[in-house]
Image 1 (cartoon, one colour):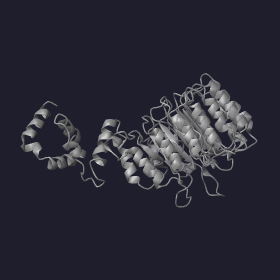
Image 2 (cartoon, rainbow, N blue to C red):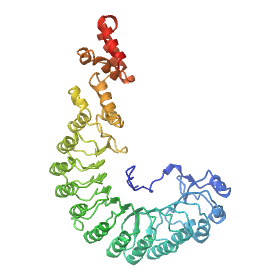
Image 3 (spheres, helix red, strand yellow):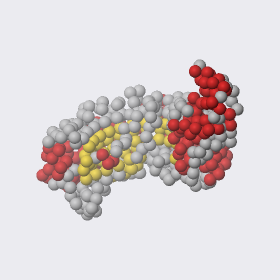
Image 4 (cartoon, rainbow, N blue to C red):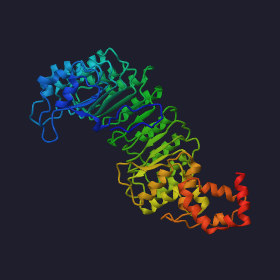
Length: 517
C-alpha cells in the first residue's frame, strides 16, 4: 500500500501486514475468541463471503465473543456489503462497539469500505479509539467521512487517555465532504497530541484547503513532534498548501521520509519540483523523498540535482512516472550522481519515458559507484535491447579480464518484483544476485571465473592466463580459482592443459612455493 522504508534508516514503516495471515471470522475463530486462544492473534471481520455476500456471523448473538479477549493483536474490519443490504455491523453498532472496546490487546486496526457516510459505523469505532490503550496503528482505506463522523473520530482521539502507543495513522483513499474543513482540521489537530506518532499518511479526495494544511503545519512545528515519515500526496495539494507544508518542514527536524507522490492538477501545482528543490538546499535530515507522478520536467530534475549536491542524508529518491523528463534532464541530473559525497542508495526512474540514451547517461556515471544498490529503470517501454545489453555490460563487461574486474559490483535491483522483467532477464538476474554479496572482491572473482574463463554454458575455455604465470604467482592463482565449487571446473581444465604441474621438476618448484603460502 505504501512504499516501505529503507531498511536500517531511522524511520520505520508500521503500515504493512501480510494479507493472507489474517484468520477469517467463522465458527471456529469465534470459538477461539471465546476461549481466548493465544493462537488467534490476527482476525478479519467482513460482511460477505467470496462466493456471494452471505453473512459470516450473527452479530446480535455472537458479538459477545469479543469481550474480554486478551490475545488478539491485529483486527481488520471490512464494512463492504451489497448495495441495498442493511449492514449488520451498523445495525448492531452500539453493542458491537461496546464489546470491541473491551479488547484492550488490539494493537493494529484496519478499517475498510465504510460506504456513503454511514455514521453508525464510526460511532462503533469511536468507542474503541477512545478506550483502547494499546493501539499502535490505525488504518482507514476506501472510507467516506461525513462531517459528523469526522467530528466523532476527532473527539475520540482527543479523549484517548493513553497517547503514548500510537505510531501509525493512515487515511488511504479516504473521502471527505468539501463542507467539513473545520472538522478535518480538528482531526489533524487531535493527532498532534500523539507524540509517539511516527508515520502519518494522508491520501484522499477531500483533504484540501488552507485550514487542513495549517493544522498539519502546527503539528509538524511542535517541538515534541516525532513523525518520521509523512505521506501527504493527494489531489488536494496546491501551491499555497505546498508552501505551508514546506515552511513547516523547514522548522521540523523529525521527518526523515517525505512522500508527495501525485498525480496533481498541473495548473494548481506546476511549481512543485522547483519549490521542493529550493527547500532541499537547506535540509539536512531527509532520507527518503518520493516525487513520482509529480509532473517533474527537465528543468525540475536539473534543479533537484543541484539542490542535492551538498546533501549528505538522502538515501532513497523516487522520481518515477514523470513522463516529461528527457535525456537532457538525465544528463543534467547525472552531474549530481558523480558527486562523491552522495549518500543515495536507491534511485527510482521507472515509467519516465527513458530511452537508451538516457539509460546510458546514468550507467556511465554510475560505473564506479559504490553506493547505489537499486536503480529502478523498468518498466520503460522506450528502452530497447540495446539499453538492456548496456545494463548487462555495466554489471559485467566481458571484453577483458580487467574490464570484468572493474565492472559495477554494487547494483542489486533494476525492476520491482511485480513487473515482468525485460529480455535477457535471466542473465541480468544472475549478475544482480552475484552483486548481493557484500564481499566485492569475491563478486569480482565469481564473475571472472563464470564469464572470462568460461563460456555461457559453463565450459572452461581460457587457461592461458595461468599457463604464462610466473612460478611464484601460480600457486596463489590456483588457490584463488579453487576456493569453492565455482572454480573446480577451471582447475580441472588447467590441470589437463598443464600436466607438468604433477610430474616434472617444474611441478616440484610449484609445490615448494605452495607450501610457503
